[in-house]
Length: 393
Image 1 (tube, one colour):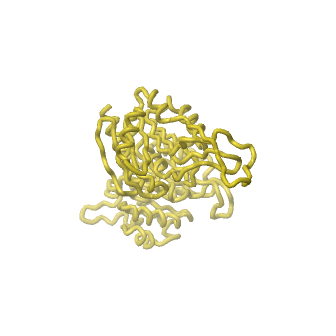
Image 2 (cartoon, one colour; image 1 turned 60 degrees about the vertical axis):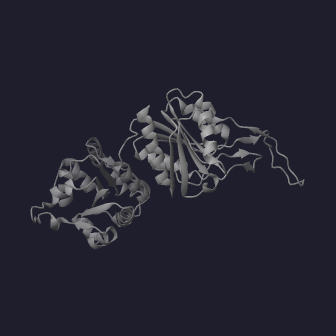
């Protein structure tokens, strides 16, 4: 992916060095345009070094060589155009269509629809009616305006105007750059374990980290879906830009949350490791360590996948199977018994890790083996299979 980053004269620009480095490490090709004000704060050599890329400034604006006109050629080059940080001054110039430096010339000549604006400034400048009106104009012209964070500002004040975390900015870039084969689809993803309470202190749970479900939710957003994530307890950071997040603990809460959303969605991906059993009775007080053995009667939880499979109508239903042995055989049985369209099977030992190896089985009999690979890439393969499944239905 080719990303052109415009850097303007905000003190937060030092943070953009980390963004540039991260984008380069992710394999993206970069070019950078710096305003004169930005150069007063940080040398262009820094960004050239961390991005391993060319950095253009106003002095290059009219350096026309061999037919290369900088602002027109640069405007045709990127897949994604980003201005980070974007000052109130540059935002105003873009709103009025001014082209008085190389960056604004490039922006005026850019005809693509993948453009990201990352405002950062004093909170009173950001909240000023003029700035807000300029941002409304730019949103209407197709700019994605990434809201600044609330926090301590470089000037010592506190408010909304802080440059967002680079993870957020990079994820916005990834979303803009991705194709949208899942556009207009509403997808529900469940993730993580459930906690089944024994008493106010103890629970029954499993080793699921939720990583696979979270990667599926994040990737589905990139591919254009409206995503609802229903998550059991995890230590993971919520994926950025997921449309709805519902937090649950027990299997019953997971079931209730899924049923509330079921009629609203087109696809359900049940990646959560929902407990099969829960204590038949929950002690109201902590159970004391009085005996050598403790017997806890258990009862079955509701089988969410089976319940959905009996009621899915035209929805696509994707399940997961985790086994210690006979993986493919058990996955096939689960696929048929629960009336699934697709099932993703993996060995129990990968639970909690960043990598996975999976077998993807579909109701049409096709089988695909993927991995070992990062769960982020596994998620992309699973969703690509989902696209294929949807196109055939």
